[in-house]
Image 1 (tube, helix red, strand yellow):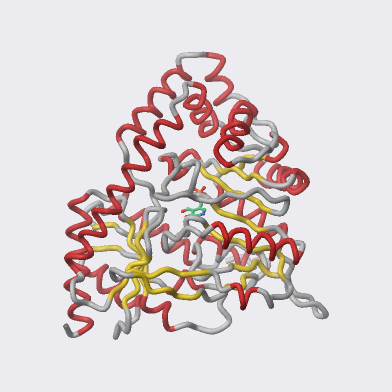
Image 2: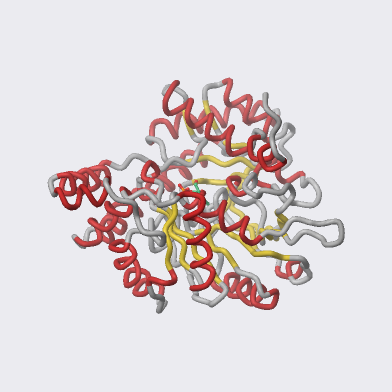
Amino acid sequence: SFPLSPFGERLSAPAGIVSLMDDLGEALNVNPDILFLGGGNPARIPEMEQAFAQALQAISANPEQLHKMLGVYQSPRGHEGFIERLVPFLNERCGWSITSKNIALANGSQSAFFILLNMLAVPATANTPAQKIHLPMAPEYLGYSGQTVAPDMFCAHKPLIELVEGNQFRYRVDLATLANTQNVAAYCVSMPTNPTGNVLARSEVEALQVLAAEQQVPLILDCAYGAPLPGIVYQEVALPWSDNSVYMFSLSKLGLPGARTGIIVGPEELVEQFVNANTVASLANGNAGPALAEALMAQGQLEPLIQHTVTPFYLAKRNHMLGALEQALAGLPCRVHCADGAFFVWLWLQDLPISAHALYLQMKAEGVLIMPGEPFFFGLDAPWDHAEQCIRLSYCQSDEVIVKAVTILGRVLRKAYGA
Ligand code: PLP
């Protein structure tokens, strides 16, 4: 094999996200009998597929539109028609007053994160400490963890744990510990959070904005599942504008992960810098996602599809999952994180005698894929036993698959607990 640069070594090392995508690829493409509660693929919603198909047919039938989608490079900031529609869409729903200069597109929000996180995080030198990406609340999206070109560029903070009636719990930002942080390059939090489904309270978002302003760094709010788009969230979400906040959106969870479209919304200057970096890395973004979304917006279809199809679909799935868990785990010392949004439930299996990773392997042997908790706690300065007591379950599969998988989980857990 060829010698690699430190950057190459780091990026090509087996990262958590790679084995997750392997599992996903295997389950979805090779072995469809696996009961797959593992990955982050959105559900298959017939009404959404139909709307995308109609929009695609209309584009294909129009030579000019087809040429624009397939035959031209997008300008650096991204598809103008889509951005022009996004400006009023976001302003009306979020109470902002942004312009197109606050928006840029990317080939998926994952690649937008790769660029943005590396634009901000500063590796240590012999004389200066690293300036890291601070995650206000572990656990956090596993997909960030391998992204920085230098190692050890994340600093995660333990949350407070609030017990909620009905065997639930909720993580809360521990502002007291965050107040003392130093060498911060940016704060970053997903909302709703992957893996927990947590939505930050308005007071938490505002407190983080104040903290970021004090540190003179950006606060990145990852809304891959959130409001107003794709709307996989079951309660009000506060998206207050501030001149140090960067909001990240994506078309993926709307049902378009194959179209690879991410949307970054932030201060003009940072967005401009992002556009330059993204153009160096990608030349241009793909047109298919923006063209489809623009078509749905032009027809006035996007908002009704979100309100009447996407949100109710996932809400019903969540309720089904919670019902199945209540039955299958009755009597076990298990708590569910308040499932405000995203399409996951996050379980805290208190005092589990085996690690979550061992549970993951046992479940895999039973034909069920779940996500063990440990990899979501990257960036902590010391291991936390809580991480080994947590798992994430996706509720994107059919109701039957969910019941089957959760029933097996109950059986495996009863054995593990000796119950
Ligand atoms: N952010 C979060 C919290 C996610 O869960 C994901 C994907 O699962 C992404 C970002 C990246 O999504 P995409 O690159 O498809 O926009």
